[in-house]
Image (tube, rainbow, N blue to C red; front, side):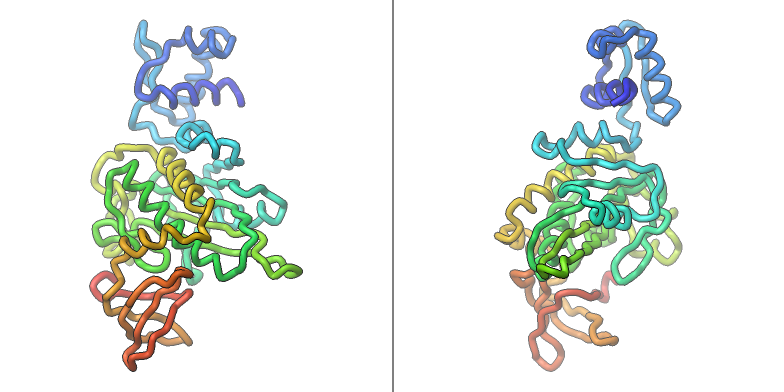
Length: 326
């Protein structure tokens, strides 16, 4: 890492306390002038850094620039060896992750962007990805499992995101099957899981878990067609944490669940967070909408429903709607 990166990491570790320039100079074995130049470079990059005589420098709580140093700081020690790629702008983190996976990127590789120019959601929809206000990230996994288990990874990601938001932001979250996270009856997160299989073995070669979170997008900033149903974690208040912190916590929570995801222990929590169970829903299948009652979440992550004729089905993909929300 460059001196600028080392200084940033040190400020992150001590945020919002002050760190003396002399202390950093001695720590990194450089001159005070070199530290000052690194601080000025960080300020030009947009970091909000205060300075005070006899106290040093402090990274202000309001400073929220995505960086490797900030994310690594909040990762658990066992995940700090992961390859982390942070982009100012990218077409799609999932697309970048798929290319990296094909090129042999290791499991645990994380791709993060400040904005996406062609972000994608499920069913081929675009994902609104404004700069500086959201979290757009993808993780590369190599589970060597059957394709049917990939639904479990989506449900695990849903639980992980809810846990991360609640532990860092102190906001209660709920899940709409299969992949949407809701807060105050508005969607704040979507999850897109894409698998690539090995034709010779029939097993999954890699899985890309894409997560998009509306972190601090004001309601009026959403496109008109989304304003009634889209929300943010901090839509009308100053964030109490940074995006880097939440990104790291999502990785922490997800990788903890992923370690033994085939044991399905997290499904109990997934069910408890679901707000569609015992509700009348519509689901899209065979090119048309059907009405049904959502009964339960199956052990493979599918949604068990009973249709109008009384027949019970398990949905493994597709889209559902709830009249009072959608």
